[in-house]
Image (cartoon, rainbow, N blue to C red; front, side, top):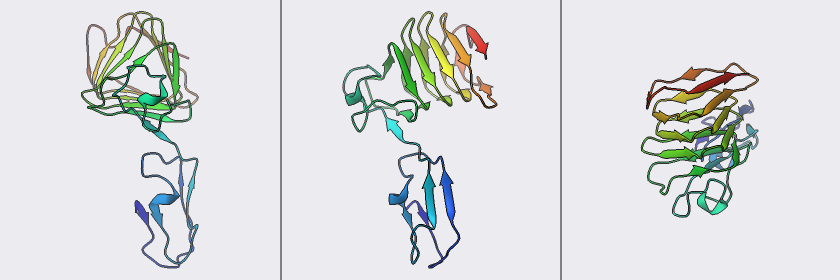
Length: 178
């Protein structure tokens, strides 16, 4: 179990709101004696890139579970899951985590739209005039090749930019804050 009550019969409710990851949810708790004292609300599903197929972000079979992420789901791209994704057209996710050793490419003139954060420990290649829209934090601990792309921060909550990684040329080519 991921979460376990150590006192049998406890009646206080422990609530996890917006929990995410592969071990979030009712299946991963143990409540000896009294059920429903650990609650899970608004569980955020994480969709993991499987690789092995094409590089198309929008092709469901390239993702574990057979479905590409949407604006309510986190995208997770692990190292070793080649070939790595290429974003074409406009693609959505709640947020994205890019592991070290991974390359994520956003093709020229295309858009990757995150409702929440981008967490890059790998390598992001932004095509000419591509757009990265971020509703949360932009965390770049990896590499970024911005070319002539635009990063738009348009969240409804406080946002931060952490560009602690390296970049080819300028860390960000064009930053827009809405």
